[in-house]
Length: 178
Image 1 (cartoon, rainbow, N blue to C red):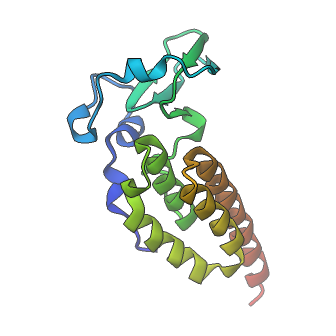
Image 2: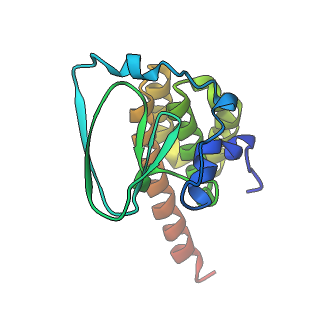
């Protein structure tokens, strides 16, 4: 795989791979909406998140870094939220399944399938050709994307990473005696 899609330059994800935030992200390139607070009101559902010291979180287009003690947050609204453990950075996107996860992550954070559509289909076609047994998982991801359930598509992409790891491990162990 020489596939390294252009969306790897996404500012929020790139900032996470370069260490703690030192200043504001360039929101101009992402079409940042300064009225996001208005959209957060009235969703009727709250997400409770507990952050460990130094743990990071993406909310919308912002990277939030916790200080030196545990913190509990209650988040109301409809902006995309990703915990650090669920964030794929460009540096970690080193397999076809991880690149697909990164593409879907970008769609989720941007709230739009258009965010990385071309790269996504190129990656899906490549992995389906290389590993046909994963096509049912790709179908699941595609169905979630088509119904605009981008967070569920991200969770399905995580299953694809697990499948790829198992498949590559099995391929290595069965090919060892050849």
